[in-house]
Image (cartoon, rainbow, N blue to C red; front, top):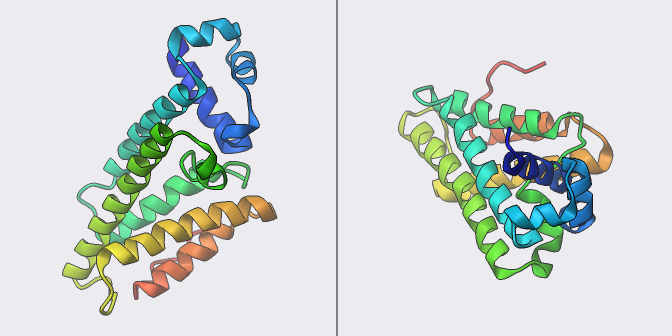
Length: 192
């Protein structure tokens, strides 16, 4: 792993555990094991490293989601939940994008734009899964639009991560996923 990748991974970890405003460039340099001045060789600002981290995180998410290509819609959705279980760990980490929610009004417009891309990537993917599930008769969403159901799923997952962290409950996501499955009219085998 090169220095740039170490910086991006450390940035993601710090943002997931401490939030964007919860660490300094010096904290980042210390975690990577380089001088603070060396960070500026790779990134002009904290915003620039956060934007690059979101792009890097998007690549990781796409790679995770690609693993379920060709599978049934419910299996793809279960893969989405599993990705967040991995990301959340023992309720100690937030989604790198979702962790910006509380500071959204205090960040730059360029970082807000990167967050819009990140959020829409999730919404687009989940909407495609919902749409396919409805077309195959596997999901029942009544008269709701697939995009609205996708928003409910993404918001439910993000809320589960937040409440899981606040309550130190790594199983919060499982409880929310169960409710989301029920809302789609599908109850697969329970996960341990």
